[in-house]
Image 1 (cartoon, rainbow, N blue to C red):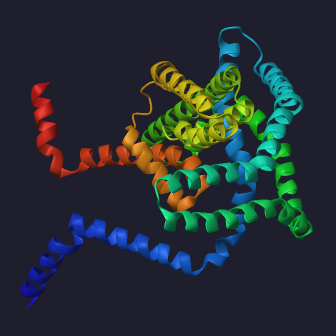
Image 2: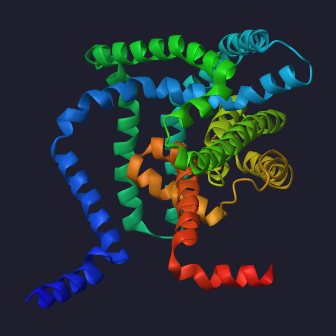
Image 3: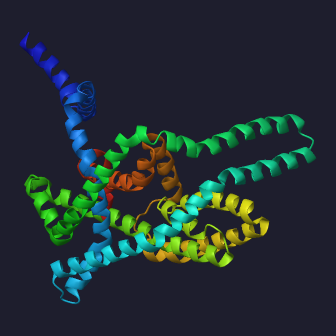
Length: 389
């Protein structure tokens, strides 16, 4: 009887308790159960969520500015032997001057052009619809023409009522406006303090984090964090630098062409260029339409020439010099990540999708290398490498 129980125990131990696949599946099941339980008690995490929503925006903005300004501080400290705190102070003064210039020079121009575009949008839409209907009449498509006429009347009325609706509903949105103003005020106040301490004590952050990690995992954790920092710094510095340069190229090019909304659409192009590969092309759709209705086909040709020149400069010069091959993400992967993250998380997903993917990629690669080093499935590969050595 004892021998039978022993055989049964050995069989159970071999196929279940000591089986790697069963252990992995058990761990995954436990993790899914934890997620399920957590989803049922979301009220517990609501204060934590609110805290991260409040502090999240200032931290993200501070992190972006840190990646942009930290190389300047490091160069000033290491090559020119300048005091780090004094360098940070000088950079803050420079940033304040740039913001002041933007407020008094760039923003009023963009605002004027934007107001003009919004004001003339019903007129532009009427021109587009009139030309489209006239073209369809030549094609003798009467049914489609009548439907477009009806749709055009509805859209024209909707555009005409936008301003009235904004004015009439202005008082009802006072509460939300106050909330937005408070959040902006908190961000403006907290970002300089967070950024200052990041720039001054950023080198101490990694050793501080490693202190709470068990000694056995400190080396691997350090490698993961260094790789993540390298990927994020490369992406953030590269994309923002290219976005600023692209905005300048479009502003100058559109202004030379005599495009009516050159400054505004240049700023929009720079903002959208934060989205890799898709940003510039997304900008050109409204640019071509506006150029067509404001100045005619000749202006469309001019802005398209500017766009082609910008694409040539960006792809042949800016991308290789500023970003290079450090991200190691295929363009098709980037487009797939952007589309997926936009579907799941909206605008936030579009902006944070690629950095999030880069972080996940680094973690997955390190996990795979660790698994390959301990798994028996890769014994032959390791043995062949040893033989080659």
